[in-house]
Structures are given as C-alpha cells and as structure tokens.
Amino acid sequence: MIDNHDSVKLDPQPEILVAEGLRKSYGPRKALHGLTFSLKAGRILGFLGPNGAGKTTSIRILTTMMEPETGHFTVDGIGSEHPEQIRRRIGVLPENLGFPRQMTGLEYLLYFGQLYGRTRSEAKENALTLLEDVGLHQRAKSLIGSYSHGMRQRIGIARALVNDPVVVFLDEPTLGLDPRGQAELLELVQRIARERNTGVVLCSHLLAEIENVCDDVVILNVGQIVARGSVAEVIGRVQQNIVLRNALRVQVPPDSIRDARQLLETMPNIMSVTPVGELEGWLRLELVPPHNGGLVKAHQMNNKILSALIRAKIPILGFEVEGGRLQDVFLHLTEDAIK
Amino acid sequence: MSNVQNVQKVSVNKLKVSEKATPTWWLVFRRELTDLWIGGKAFNLVLIYSLLLGGMVYIYSFNTELSLIPPKEAVYEMLKNAMAVAMFVGLIIGADAFSGERDRATLESLLLTPANRRQIIVGKFLAAFSIWPAAYVIAIPYLYVLAQGDAVLSPALFWGAVTGTVLVIGYTGVGMLVSFWSSTHKVS
Image (cartoon, rainbow over all chains, first blue to last red):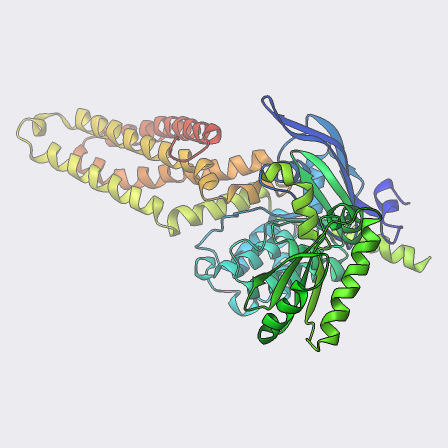
C-alpha cells in the first residue's frame, strides 16, 4: 500500500518543499509578505536578499522554529501543522551555530543521531560515514574545541545530514571562511544535492559562488520575492533593463592595459574607459546610451569593441556585459533596500 | 515497477526510527551530566559548598558560644544551612539550563531535532538535580561530627533527605523556568 507521502516520491524530481503565501510581522513591521516558492529534490536553491529582507524569518518558519501568521508549507508532502514530522525530514545549519567544545566530532554526531531515533550502533556507523563524507574522519576523535572554523562548519553540515534529510537549510555556511574553505564547502554542498538527491536551500551573500553552485534562486527584498526561477531565467529576465545602462568589462593582460585603453578611448560611442583593477587587467567601458532598439545596438557595439581589440592584437582574457551576472541582478533588484 | 519499489524503499529507510532507540530524556540527561561534572562546573560548586560546610562546622565546634549549643540544635541548624546552599546551587544550575545554551548557540540545534520537548526538559532537570544527592552525601560526615553520637543523627538525615529533595526540586524548577523565559544567561 502506498500512502500519500510515498506517492510523492514516484516523480523523479518531486517538489519536496512547497511554501505558499507565508506572512509574518514583528509588531507593525511586516517581515514577510506572502512568500511562495518551491524546491525540487536534488536541486540547490539560492536564497538571497539584503540584510533585513526576511531571509532568516523565512528559514526559521520553514524549519518550524517559528509559526507563520498565515500561509502554509509542506516538506516531503508533510504539512506545516506537523512540525515534529517535518523536523524528522529536514537538516539545518543555522548561522553562527555553537558547538559543545568538550565533545569530539564523533560523539557530537553520535548524540544527534540518537536524538533522531537511531540506535547507538546505527548512529555510530552513520556518524563515521558522515565524517568521511565531510573530510573529518581523521579528526573524528578530536575535541570540537580544537577544530578550525572551517572544520566546525563541516561538522555542522554533517550534523544537518545525520537524519538523511530530504531538505537541508544552510544559513551562511561560508561565512568567515577563507577562499579555499569557501570553495571546498560549496563543492560539498553540491555533492550533497547530487549524490543524496537532497534539496538544498542555501542562504549566502557570496553571489558569484551562488551563481556557480545554485540551480534556482529566490531573491527577497523587504519581505517580498522580487525574482524567482532558475539562475539563468532570473538573470535573463532582469538583464535587459540593466544592459540599457550600457556598460561592459574587458580583461586584457596587465601589460596591454595602456594600449587597450588608448585604443578604446578613440572609438566612437564610448564615454569612458576606467580600470577596474590594474592587477587583474579589467577595464570598465561606459557606452553612449542607444536611442532605439538599445539591446541590438549594444550588441553591435560589443562586437565592434572586440573586433578592434583583436585587430590591434591585444589578447582578450575576459569579457562581461554588465548586468549579465547574478550580482548585477541582485544589486538592481534590491537597489531600494541598499539605498 | 522495480524502480518504483526501489524509490519507495529508500523513502521508508530514510524515515525509519529504531524501536530500540534510547529515550530522549536519558540522552539529554547523560550529556548534561557529563557537561556538569566532567566539564567542571558542578565539581567547582560542590567544592565551594564543601568548604562552606567545613567552615560552618569549624565555627560550631570551636567558637566558645556556639559550641555550647546542644548537638540536636547544631545538627538541624547545619542541615538547614546545607539545604540552603544546595538549593542555591540547584537554582544556579537550573538557571543555566536553557539560557546558557541559548548564549552558547547550542540550544537551536537541539530544538531542531524531533526530540520531545518534555523529555528534553526532564533530562536537563534531572542533570541539574544531580547536585543534591552529592551535596547530601558530602553533608553526612559534617553532621556526624556535630551530632557527637547523639540519636538525633538518623531522624535528621531522614528528614533532611525528604525536605531537601522537595526544596531542591522546587528551586531547580524555578531556576529552569526563569532560564526558559530569559533571553540570555545574564538575565537568568
């Protein structure tokens, strides 16, 4: 016999997290105005927004730590009216999570494994596998107090996976990590989604990394969703408005910067050429705004610029239309909040 | 068909809770007990308690006026003091139960588990209460010295155990209630 819960699993990419019209206020201030989105199994959803946009409130509601005023959500088909059952199906790494310093990594995972209803032997077996997965097997018997920040984030992720969750919520998991630590942790997040077929909700301010790692994105601003969809869709939808600003970036070798600058400054329709960072060799070009059919004309201009550089035998190491990155989309959509 | 069966099997395995699983209250109790006694907090408080009792017994025995108090009165006076200190220690440990964890940011991960909230409270309460049996055992030799062979010792120990248990339960509970409603450990 198949009950409702199991029937959800028959779809190869079922929606494992569905939020509909979630609202929450703190006194007169509305923190969330009808949050609606969904997440499919095995996909990573970037949850973005400036400070105070409602990200933490959303995460606290979806992890059953807070009740919404109105609205409903389901996790793996279980409704928000069953918080205990939802907690069995989710894993959470809260921002600034504290760790018991006197426990070893193994003891920590063993304790939480047992709290989720595993026997001691099952919990130990699972803990050892998780420690291996997050690359901490060699420090399994070291006290957590002796772990580096990156290792603590890893043990936090292992704890979030201790119940084989269908959805994992990671709130700023890369906060305070060095670039290598950030890259390794994001790779781990990708592995979790792909290998375990787990849905991941990832809150972060590292937009470039989010763009590379996430499949879908939800951008919140002042408690409202301002963009939602796959990363490519969101960028594409917003890009046209931003391209009309007519700016682009070109990267050339540092020793060719002067030649490139001289060449580009003599070209028509280029208002200014300014170095973005001398070391990286990036130049920012601001173009004269086109009058009609702006997007087409902008593309023609881009081609002319590239052709000129190629003819002058200046190597082009990179080329970006401003507005073509998630960061540009984010800044455009949350402009009011940032001001 | 086989694929469908496999998918269902994975789903069921994911949500399986073992019937032989250890009860939550016992897990929390054991962990709190380790934190309290191995972590050193309870040990330090009991050491202070022990020194206080030692000081009181010394005064009762060697102070010219207090040493004239009959053993019966001295024993009950000492028992009252021992219970008062144990109640205070219970209050302090109870007050740390939730707000202390909140301050250390470890409470959220506990509340994010499906563990029954009542069982978490019971586990924490029993660990905080564990200070009383230790305090009671430590007080026995001091009371023995003050009793000087008087028959008052046995009834005093009996009534001390009964009243002390009730009072320490009450005070530890009050400490935990305050801790539960306090946003930080400083408040509680």
